Length: 383
Image (tube, rainbow, N blue to C red; front, side, top):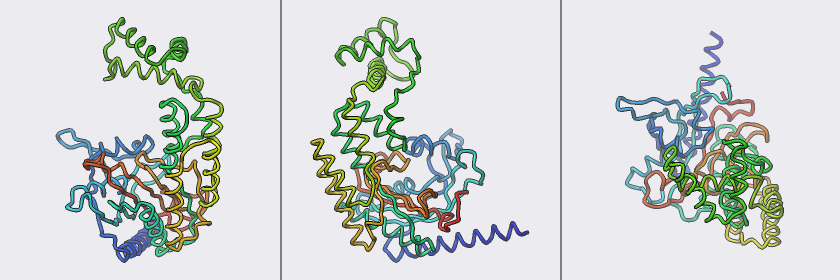
């Protein structure tokens, strides 16, 4: 009986917190949006990262089409927005209810969580929109009792601009971008990748690094043609050749100089208050002759917009290595916690390219944030 009473009290507190947050969002002008519980699975399987995919609750209908219980709100709200008459125009929505994810890494729990949040679409003043989402989510959490949260921010757009200007083969640029998005250490990203074919491929891969890329590509295609191989696993001979070249380039760090690696290590080690971090990145860019002015100007404009919202910018910590582990973020990202080693109470960021992948005719500026209701109390832990 005591267990039932405790469960009921927890549910009541969650409902009260959710109500307070949604009331705050309504006062701020965010319209309520509540997408369906059952969602098409493919949109999450294609866009949300390996770790996330393994936590979906999947089912299928009589035709074999796969669906999942709503695992988060951002993509469902995006789909509802695109299906509405306001698609393409500025719009702001709030949401709140249950999401469903299988417990992570052997943890216990029933996989159902209460979440609230907000999404902003179509605004061209991106830095001001970023600041609004950050401030609104922090204020809403405070209205539900979560105050003095520690805020960590990052910038996927700034990272992309930095990597784009580094002198390295595209495959290494992609590897760094993917590793950063997954939160990997730089030393692990630069470590030689495991070769599926083992030592028998090492001679071929080593040879490919010593010839012109176009000659190497033709060589692999000719070898595949001689062997009568036209496609493997849906890949054409040209795609297989490109994969061989990628593996050859990645082997032993081929194509990345010690200077470039040191530059990447210095960049991703930058952290601190936004103003000091910006100054450090500008010095690095100037010393390395990298043009990061546009990305850093946007970074500074966002910091000013955050300050204008009444937040104390010097208490916000920036880390160049910080990323949220979802594949669709393209710019500003942030998390807020009770303590630096605690689970995020709030998490969000900018995802300007997501809506086009969901059916929009072109990219639509978008930024949002989610609040975990069960983490609002400092002693709360993820179920």
